[in-house]
Length: 457
Ligand code: GLN
Image (cartoon, rainbow, N blue to C red; front, top):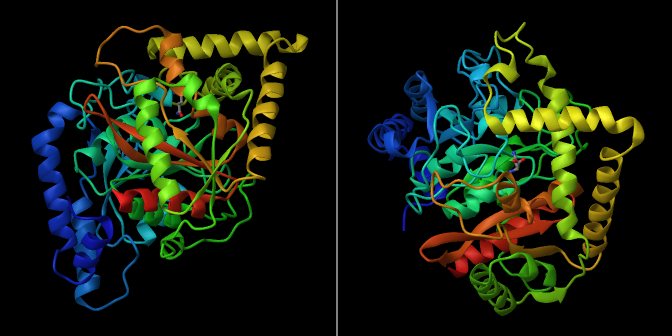
């Protein structure tokens, strides 16, 4: 078992492992392994110098932040000053960020070291990591298979232990889907909990930035660093910072009510469901009460999601008209991005008759109401993350088959609730993640359930 995030942090703070050594060994591993995995598309040339500055603070006995010396990969749709935020697209190939996104400022304030920019599906449109203009990413936990997407690079980097933590984004499952396929931990925060200033958006009513890590403690640590009110942003929830790591000291699941739904087995490969059912039994043994909840329209979320995300993406990409960033998106983007732009434009044109978009919003309300009603009876809902196993890299699949990876993840985005993923086991040697959905601001319960399962092994 590799060293946990908190144990490494303690060694750095205690001067046993220097931040510079931690960075140097991450860079060595990247050098050695990433040519094959392709999880980073740019490295931070100042990482070592930044780590040395943290080491000096530790030597002088000064207070250091809660991420002191940990290496952090950033999805390429988040602005990090001086590095490229390409969104893995030729559209933004030469765009060097002029500023740090709010989440990056918060990571730096806690002495985390940005190690580089992670590969991803182009403009976060995808579920496989194959649509990047920088080439596909391999899955270190199941070589030759897709790592999942769109936060493909971050999840693969964590799985291969190329860095300690990563920031991903999740609009319809892009943190949870790759976390599941790569056998790691990830969390999509409640909509409005994490500031998105400095994120290049895919669907602004759905996007959230969130953590990826090898263990639940790492996810809690990065989440508490980036979450909480920001005066820069009007659509954020007005919530103060929460110390999630502290809340994780509560280990028991006694008294916790955990929802399950028949819907999940209808939508999921039976071999995956078997692994998930094993985890549900474990939760029962740990003292939780398992309650059946009704989610009759869950699967309708998928088509509503793809309509909404296409309209929002179309509108968001109008700024890439070639004048500011040098290239018109339609001239240089890949097939899936173009498909969404054209779909979004078509739906927007038809909107005056309320043909598609208005209906999609109605379905969104329906899915949200059903989930919120379920959360009146339970604290969390557990089930599978992805309904099928990841395909082999390069396999030709239809757009609908690609979208079908997202059946179980889009409802949380539509409803604005939070959802985490923790490894549940393997099917044919390929990791399968358990999804734990929580109510609005239910991150403490989600993290507790994930940690209990992680500890139970
Ligand atoms: N796979 C979904 C899509 O392609 C989700 C993407 C995401 O969450 N960024 O839209």
